[in-house]
Each structure stands twice: as C-alpha cells, then as structure tokens.
Image (cartoon, rainbow, N blue to C red; front, side):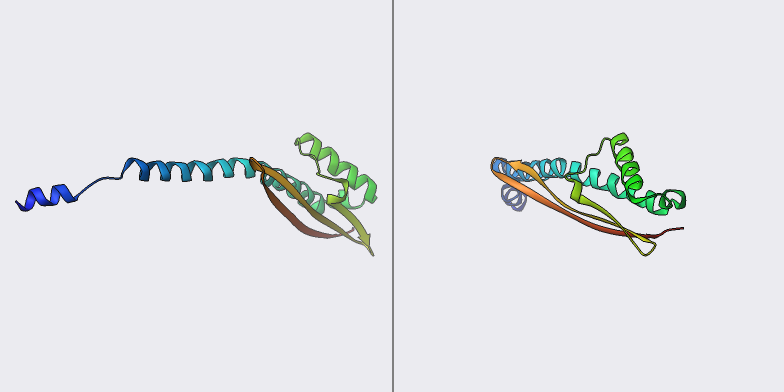
Length: 127
C-alpha cells in the first residue's frame, strides 16, 4: 500500500513545463548568437589597436599613417569601423592616445533591438 501511494505521487516534468524550459534555453541561445558578432568584431578591433600601441616602430610614424595601417589591418581581418569617429588617435606631447568609442544596434526579434556600447582607451609614448 505504501509503495503504490508513493508511485502515484511521483511524476516527471509535464509537457508544458518541459516546453517552457526548452523555449527559454532557445531564446538565450538565439540572443547569444546575435550578440556574438559585435563582440567578436570589437575584440578584433581592440587587438589591432593594442598591437599598434605596443609596436615602437609603428608609433614613430605620423598619425595619419598609423590610422591607415590600422584600417588595413582591420580590412585584412574583415572588420569595418561603424563610423570614422569610432576610433580617434591623438598625439599630445609625445603620448599617442587611442580612444575607441561607439555603439552598435543589433536587431533581436521583431521590433526589439539591443544596443551594445564599447568604450576603450589606450596610451602609448612615442619613441
């Protein structure tokens, strides 16, 4: 009698409970796939700027040449700056300052967009 009672009380997950869990997991995976691209491109951009900031030979060149070389490296990596103002390079008294500041709008579902903001700053002294 006790065995029969405990078997009737034990139940697995219902169909709708499992469906809700699967839909939630699917939503999070879809969001992850959509946000992966902007973060990957930003990672490539910061990697290129860090490499330039650590390259003494590159830092000895004029600012417009440095910017052109960064743009060439980004083209090789198939990354495009969202706008020319996204990357600013300034030489202040022998210190070259790189500022990456932009936001990217990613369409998510229907009329819902995600806005991803990036703001990084690098300094390097000219040789």
